[in-house]
Image (tube, rainbow, N blue to C red; front, top):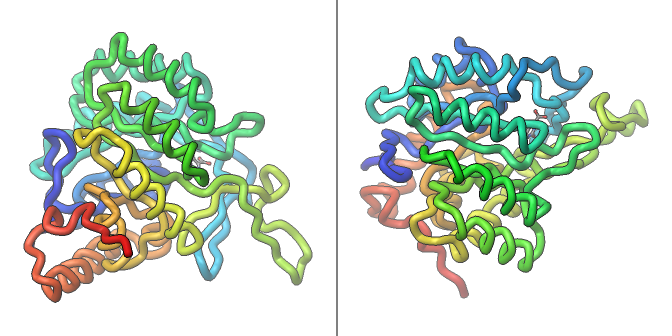
Length: 310
Ligand SMILES: O=C(O)c1[nH]c(=O)[nH]c(=O)c1I
């Protein structure tokens, strides 16, 4: 039974990856992921310069997942580009370089550097960070997405993925797919955390994270139905050559099976990877293979996108 998959001409020995932002801000953390059963690693979304991020407490775990308002803490774009250049082309293991500029110009500046660099792997353009004070998630403004991709593909000739926020309305699925189908993107990653949730502690009668009055992105079990709906809706609307990475609510082999059934080519694990560390990739690989064995599937292609309706 094989858990191999590919995106464009990039081979992954395993469909499991970390989600950007979780235990992936330093080279040590990234090395640990590459040394694990994961099919590759995704770097913490980078800004052109290093950032401290928001005030702590800025992340809180709950019984069903977590809330975060990290505020893009990272070591700066050059740090991650250097790691990506040094660790690309490991057989069957891909390094995905994630960027999240605070403006169109910052994104174009980083993309120009990638284009000029020796990194020939996948870049993930994060248009969905929910935690920058005063900034909204770019991908909720469809014309802004069209503009940044128009500017990007005037010079960017390497392979680009787009990290999307969750959408909650059929016309939004139609609109974002219509915009993305107009560009030579390699994949979309659905979804980022569900933005601006609020976790309350009834004992202390208080919010549980400091930034933004306690508002932050929600991950974990809370968001799996929304993640699956976004993967499915985009699979049904995007050009067949655009792959999908499914992210959101994964903590078992069954959850991965559901994401692939909805159309995911690969999956990323965030909240639960944060709780368990890299041994999660062994556990979930084993659980997924057990499910495939029971159902008589040899490869993930056998059931990818084959969700039935009633
Ligand atoms: O606050 C963050 O750093 C963050 N947090 C998220 O939940 N998603 C994101 O894309 C980002 I860039």
